[in-house]
Picture 1 (cartoon, rainbow, N blue to C red):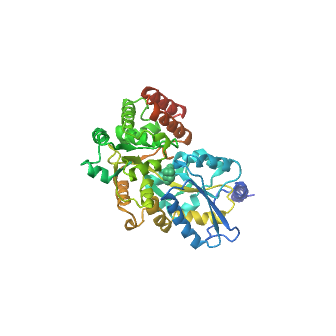
Picture 2 (picture 1 turned 135 degrees about the vertical axis):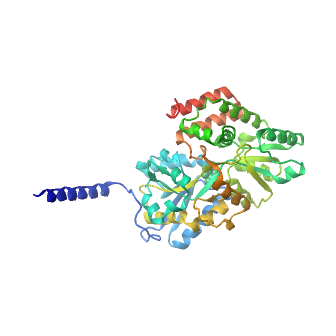
Picture 3 (picture 1 turned 180 degrees about the vertical axis):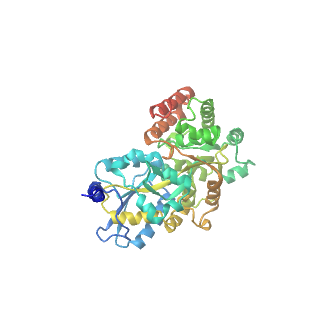
Length: 428
Ligand code: GAL
């Protein structure tokens, strides 16, 4: 056999072997494009979107899906609880128990690690290529979406975590201006307290809200770069600035409603609507929630000290390996990533599009301001919402801060936060 023929034989054997191996890989990539399948008549989407604004946004995308796939029944599998508090555990059980939904909500970033993607999640690289998504999603988001060099979810939005919502009338009636620094916050807070108004409304019932509030204070006290460093080991949690942030948080909590541990984020937002409280630190799903309530008298500002910082997170939809309705699922992912899908979803959800080509005219003033800030601010990843750290670290972080909200032990909390970083192999 000539050398050339031998090489060709080796190469073709290699090609056959590769094809056999590919055939053995379970559900690695989505099936070829289809506008809704005839083979099955269902598609199941799993999320935690049950509150006002988020449920409406999801339904708006479902409406588009129904038009494109009139014969497919949508199974809207939701598990209530902000930030996925309850949903994520149910999802894990379903994935590992061999009963996956077709598609599920997944934060862009390190959260995907929780679900053991090599085993349970379909890589979506080929869909990204065929839909041209690598060109319509911003660079910062693209790098957040890649984990172990693959895309695992189709982003539907970008949310901002560091927003301070306020009741405009309360401020106007009392001749006050929304604070831009924590010192101003304390002054405004004292003035409001003297009038019998709760300065800051907060609800920590679901266990993640205290961590959410604190990450915005961390960004405020440390600045964008040092905050990011907390998640990659460049900033130690023993840093005096972390002490300062904890001290600030402790003082801030003395301006909060006393029933916080009995309230969810939306219960707290209701206090603002009712004029019982003046300010609320929460992500911009609150904008969607206010809108769904028909409440218009709210103002917004970055959390004091976070001007120029955008604490970001993004919701995506992933595809489960072993999905029962592959073609219907793929049609869903295409709608989730499309301009029409995102323009229908985001104005209701209170988020901006993940895509860069949505029409700003469809969005309210708050969301228009968020679009501008996203394009010029320093982007930092939210830990409470899956972007900055693996889920087991994020969970420990949330638990530590939840305890801190009530106990207020600065030294013990800081030690526990450093330990959590060490335990996750990021700090020494
Ligand atoms: C976040 C999620 C948002 C919103 C919020 C409140 O984690 O990304 O879309 O649902 O929780 O539940």
